Length: 609
Image (cartoon, rainbow, N blue to C red; front, side):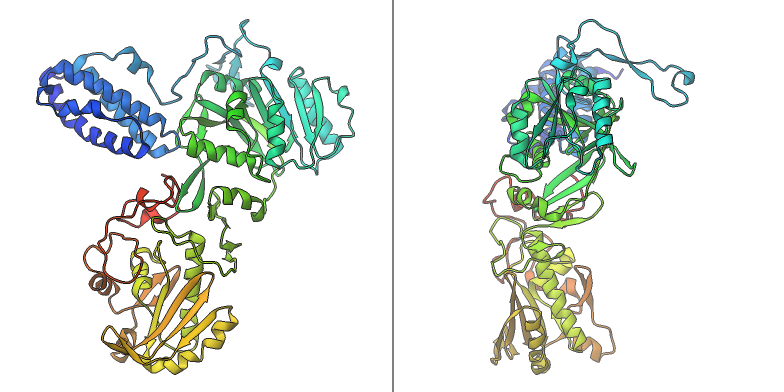
């Protein structure tokens, strides 16, 4: 045990940085004021008991902040370490923790075992030896016999659908499986037309409910309203029902963890391919990015943002959220997105030892258009890397339109629009190359290549220039531009630009963008070739394109100090960098003011934060 005096000094040194962290977190999350911590800078805080009091308050506030970071997994984990360190400091300086701090252990849920009465019997690991579990490993955790529990038919309702392709024989097997393992649990079998099977043969607990559209949000909203049990199991597109569907296990997880409102499991598809059923999703810069995996777990369940398979939910909480009755498709995904973005204190888990057998189908991109529009998602990256484009692109190609791109002060330009502009620039540069003409990126287009290897995330237009000597030859490309769907305006007017002679410009318009092609009397790529050197090329959206001799030097001299800090420009000129304007739609995934005005990685869409 360290001497008290040394502990006290150590506590002061270590805790002060965490106070700064707390200030940043509380500011970004809009939680209660941190006025309590002003006392830490008071000259009188040398009193040990007063310092310990503030340490306890810091630990409590950090724990509350952590609860709101359930879906910001890396921050959640880091904050857990900070909380543990603060608790260790309290113990080292005071010798004990108060009861509330002992209970506030957020490694799992914030309120484990909160029920006074168990709804299902507990489970216990009964496999102390290899012989008990070998060879199939089908047993290990067993249900403990108890008399104080609630009958399952009073706890859960199953809502079941099956794929249209399923045979009558396999449908019978599903019902037999349900009745075999859960004979009294109420089951609603939902189908587009009345089933030919006599459901009474399987028991009185199964009813057939008919809806024309099994994917519409209104259908699931109406079904949910009929549920009166505390829990509801959504078993969509199942192909078999076996004892791998452990209903008691899911109820146990939900009932013993207050903030956990949805619990699902793994699933095996029609090809036998197994998946643990846990995705994380990040919304940033108009992009929804999915990642297969988990950052933390408790009671052998994985904390997730999205469950792709069947799941059980707390009925009351799910009714409070409600299915969006306007969505023709994606109502379940919408539920998970709302929990992630609007109810971060709520927890969703997948318990992979509970397994569902399901029929998985490829979902066409257009099915999610309404969902993408609702959440203003323009780019959707699946966990396997496939991309769904919405807004101004479809299937990786421009969704041709004449409407202006969304360029609003305080917001990033949607990635679909940026992709269209990048395609436009690459097309023109390729046409120049094919015609044997030299063209170079210029102005903001070259700055974007230097800083982001692509288009500036707040770009307004594109700039490419060429030698004045090639002006007539460039005019010869106009038919090629028009054939590619561009509207072309040519201006062959001799004049001066920034003290240098220009002969005019060719303006290209498409998908709300403008690209300016103009001649210049000084052309650095031509100078390099004349001296026997290769023109300098910069990487731009996957292509190497001609640029100035030393792009970094030229851009630094063109835009002035701190060019790698950012500014959302509205025209050409020199700007004070490092400050983004206030977001016109606070909370939107494209708000610039929620991002650092320095660095490039925060504008990418490849990472979960």
